[in-house]
Length: 160
Length: 274
Image (cartoon, rainbow over the protein chains, first blue to last red):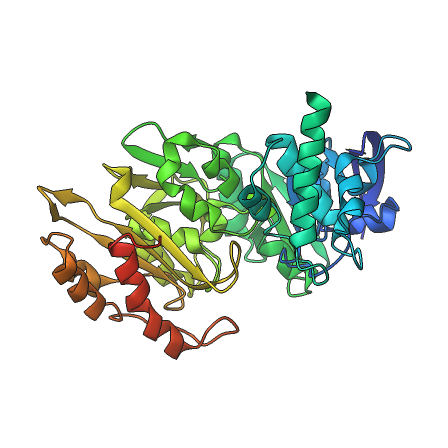
């Protein structure tokens, strides 16, 4: 079966790959582009570990057709840091012990980033709703919620 | 022959391609079809994408609302004219799923999914279905859902419904074990227009209480011409189970669903806790 070319921006860099026609974005990222931050969890859109931003909006890479990303901007947790400087969310996740096994963390970070990009001062309920599609089996969610609220506060202080 | 992907630039082209090959599946938001691809249930044939802007178009300012089948639940949430639908749209998945899941796809979601179809059923929506290059025809959503199990032919292009006269006339609740996101134990949508304080042409619909979303005709009869008070709500609760055929699944047993339906219906009608 002939492969299909696809080209999109990945964390700010133009990348191209040959994919199977019906290949999902997660497979393309992990197998063709060596981008391992998004994980394969359920493959059904239930767990959220493959959450990425596509043109700034959160989407599930396992349910996204790779060729449909042609010309778009895909962002993963790997692209959050600027050089040696971690994103405020990554710092807050460490400070608040919001990662235990770490499997859900890349998806949680992207879901949280999508929230803060749209709403820099979220309420606790906003945070809960923002990560409602992301499952964590370790931390019981509270440290993650605290971390996102702390990152929002840090962002607010930087802006002030 | 492995799966192939085709792109249709117009709805007519898409309808024609769907009509010409039964192994062609429409890929809209991907939340249903890509699951089948990932799990190996869909191994050959063609996935069809539509790039026609009309597929994602919304006309929401007038008395007659039209939502393209490719409109996502996030688009509904971002539209102020559709504020009365926001609670229902927010009840579907998390933010990432809502960016992808479409109105049209929701009509095909198997129970206990498809909560937005329940809403559309209570709004007496019509489904516009196009076959080949002919113009789209309107099908009542209830008929569409009844025919769904037999396999619907044609392309769903949009859904249409009348805007509720007052936002407060429309109510929705989703009962789930996990909040804020969880599969439905059940969902209930109620459109309760009233004339002179009396309910006229009530529409009540249930999700997860039958193989497809269903109208609660017994409840509608019980409320017709009545004021919404303790007596009429009690009568509605007594008629709540008419026409239901709930399943036992991982979320709840059929017995549990039957037991709690009147309770949640009563709360929705009295606007308690919803």
